[in-house]
Image 1 (spheres, rainbow, N blue to C red):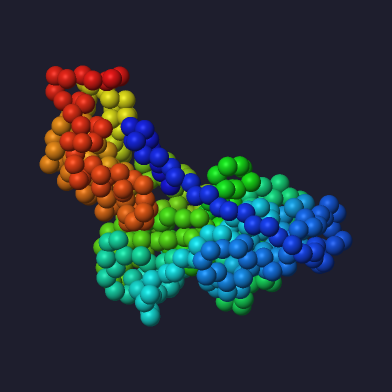
Image 2: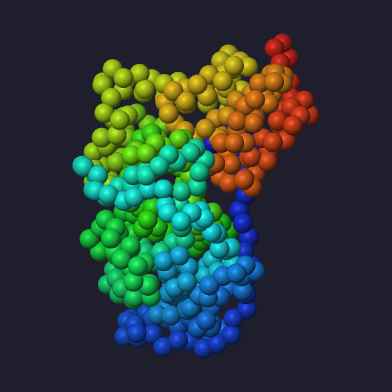
Length: 398
């Protein structure tokens, strides 16, 4: 996902997780003949629940440990969930709250074979902008370091054992994804996430098989977020019955040629409506993307030869014309801040309110960016940016 620094105003807020004291014995491992096998620490327990303060299904493990990488499983979470990670990371993950999905009897889509794409997801009814579509725990989550560095034969054996911990449906969903084997399916379908921002060992690959059915589009109608390790997909705009649900696999602020080149890594040539435009239309689109880049740089650097009160509004117009709906939260935020800088109260409030709505869709109701924009909307004149760029007044550096 794309991120930018908006005047240094927006901050990433990480979540801290509590650790828990464990007691028990080291489990007997089916991998006992593997070289370099190490047992989990002596304070491990077969029933590992992470002492979550929420109502969580029980986690089992650590099992089959190899050099500190162990299997932890939970048959009651979603369609089953398996972690391959260290005990420290597993404790953190176990303290994450369980997030419930939409309370609907029937999902608003069905899975079909889409001509030229393979499996895809089609809307059965109108899905309104902002509607939560899927909330999924990972079926498999793997710490990045062993996935990259562990000897391949050992890793494949560990993955095979992990798959046996999944209930039948979870197993079928995972194995139904693209890829020759488990390793390949992880490479193709999984999302990078961090469960511990304090060290590199927190980097993981999370696999969400139901999400992996959703195809790419360079102007997608769904955006997603991963909170802790829960994957949430939300409608970025109204989706009509019969329309395919799509997400983005890449950064979309690229020319058509660059997008197509990057998408070859997934083994296909993009044929979405935006990539299928005429050369003339594609050139106009690429020019708008270049103009967006120019305006964003000017706004970030307070380039007084370019930036006016309306620069943020021009930026919003370009994003909307390009149908880059998944990025609108940060763009409305830029516009609101810029109008406040120039002392334009009503427009600052208008774009701040639009930013709140968009940011909540993208990041959830408790997002810090949404809270900041609510504050701006309530009283633009009291905001720290107010009037700092009024015409004829240069307060930069004060």
